[in-house]
Length: 231
Image (cartoon, rainbow, N blue to C red; front, side):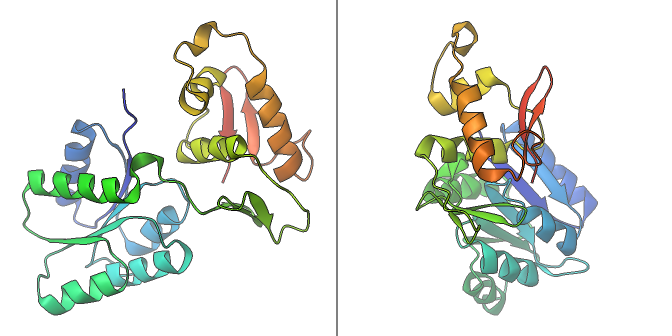
């Protein structure tokens, strides 16, 4: 089964929020939510999501402010703005700040799902690769495969970056060795494969990203479950 994208819906109207969650869960997406702009911004910048559905009229920080702050740190994260405002000025403002699309309430569910699919397709879909991975004070340049201003000349293999991306997208839970072999290495029957390749790659990553690899802070082992990336 093809992995679906993980969406973050930032919407303060509970009825609309729950309706959107139900729709996208039904269509197979992973869905998280936030009821105000401040919490939504914090979640959006965590690196866990493939697309943001962002209402404009939000408490604490409006959608324009959220979009602007996201774009200061992430130029690629797809954003679709949702709003009751439909004037040309509002549309231009949202798109100027870097939104990928704009849909006015009330909208049809089918149209919204199609818009999300189209934006994800343009952006590279659920496997969208983040240009920079942040782990505490560390920043990893995923294009040039090296650490940025980390004080150490760390260089990463493409496979190591792929592992970090996958763990980052699923950092809300442990990921088993079998799942990594299936999703990152592409082995179809990972449960019957005897290999230490995952353990070796994890050990190499820890030597690069951890202050003390024997007591990891970011790439931790969950006994009996697998590995989890703590962001």
